[in-house]
Image (cartoon, rainbow, N blue to C red; front, side, top):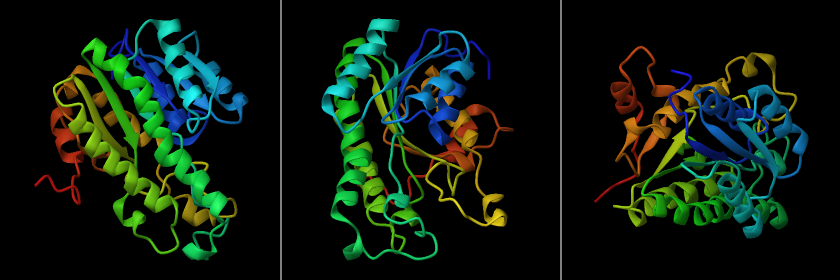
Length: 270
């Protein structure tokens, strides 16, 4: 990818301090975009990512996506600092380790889940993207162009035993993606889902996982090629789709790679 491909574009990436978020912030910055990125609790992580990107391309912020005023503040920062907003990546999320560190080997049944943990996960994973998109959409609509990307996961994981509330939260996010894409029809603003396509080496993976399992985890950078395509003019008009990064083939022309990566199974249009 050309380092200037996204020159002049401005993106927000929530949860940009580690894992997928960090990879996407660095990927967008390397492609020429300017990025505002958030962390809900650890400013040092997003500050480190900003330094890693170099220059002044990345602005780190402490902001909680479950708070309406924080979401408005993040969008205002993008406009104040860079004068525009082209892309919102809803990546911030809370996973199953908040339910139990043993969630991969010892499933917690839904009635055993702490209601406060359930609310926290839903608040971040479902309400957070809504509040961020609600703050960003009017700016994009006024500009006549924008990209909203919701980071999702394999649908099989949404149905996996013991994966409440994380699975239901991502199922809700996929519904949000489809509905928002329809709501924004003919505005120039698109909404798509993006997933790595398998278990990925992120902060959601608990400590103590056997090394042989860790070596099989996907590199978070797997999402960068489809993300840059979604951010670019090449994806114009593509909306309401689900992009599986593990199916993206770098050896193919980009349009063909994108088509191969589109996975709308389970998202009926009729």
